[in-house]
Image 1 (tube, one colour):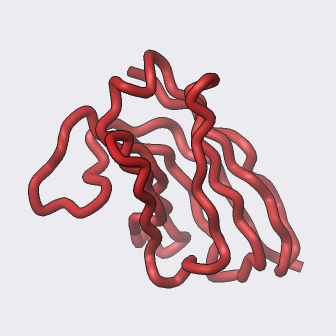
Image 2 (cartoon, helix red, strand yellow):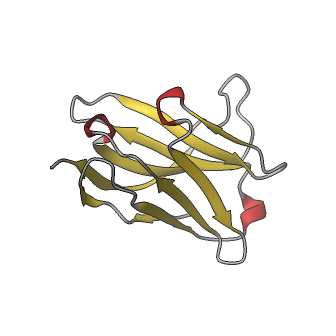
Length: 123
């Protein structure tokens, strides 16, 4: 299983970049897939996820209403549309996936990680 994230870069506050994550295999291989981020202060936090079984989505509170996660099942590619970016969204964003349910882990445990893509929000 491999995850390949892309789409980061330098973005002005208020910008709207879209991150992509190309996943190997079949969408049915994954129980859940989503995004984590690691801030310049090395704080790692879960951002958003999609449950492959029922399509439900979830977001961390700080991005609700600004970020939207989606998935192209034909291409087995995950997206994170990021809107109204703030400097505090600056982080390395990682695509992650679970092959099974992890009890107590919420939407996404992060069993498998791809390489990160840097998003820097600055004027």
